[in-house]
Amino acid sequence: MSDRRPLIVGNWKMNGNHLEAIQMVQKLSYRLEETDYESVEIVVAPPFTSLRSIQIVLEQDRIPMKLGAQNVYWAEKGAYTGEVSATMLAKMNVTHVIVGHSERRAIFGETDSDVNKKAKAALSADMTPIVCVGETLEQREAGEAEAVVTNQLNGSIKGLEGAFVVAYEPVWAIGTGRNALPEDAALMARVIREGLRERVGSDRAELTSILYGGSVNPVNIKDLMAKSDIDGALVGGASLDPDKFASIIRYRI
Ligand code: PEP
Image 1 (cartoon, rainbow, N blue to C red):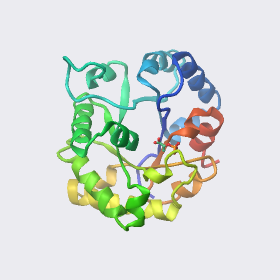
Image 2: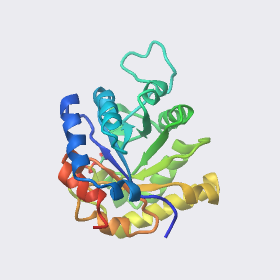
Image 3: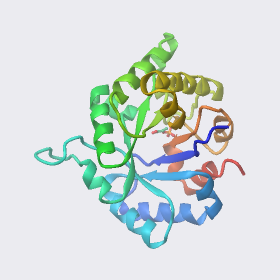
């Protein structure tokens, strides 16, 4: 067993207005007990438009959940229409920022170098970047999964000076209902841990949490979490359902 505390992150993607977001977080909190927060670090990452509302609910209701953002821009301020800076997020008590999600890579053309700049921006505002990596089905079938993930990792974490999280999210498993077999996910998590040892040294590699993401649900979470290099989950679809997300968080029960 490692000393890494399990981390479960809900990525709500572009779903819910701020009123619905408040309801979701309240419903989730009703289903959780103090011991759940003690044993698992819980992060919800709503759309930007809901961050402030959720920040207020978490503070007012003293809910020890953390707030995540789904993206960030690397510049501090200026003429970047439509973008949001790291300091703007940190000011709302955002603690985690998802960078390099496969949807951002595929739909918005983000490169490893972009992801690296975003991760550095998050760190510079004292937030933890959650750096996403993962292969497509085509790449997996061509036997390239390890090389693709290692390359993405190397490009994305280059020169990061603070603590970060890595999320292994095979693209073919995201939103498809087809999760990776726990053994395959564990193998890739081991490859990532080994890559981290080479890149940032053994001590930091041991401290870095590696999440699995891709159709995580209340049934498959237990087997995934039983793998020694898997420290948590990045959950998309199931995190929109407070019952399901609460069961994922309470995977030990
Ligand atoms: C995700 O978007 O990060 C994700 C893992 O989605 P889902 O759980 O829906 O596959």
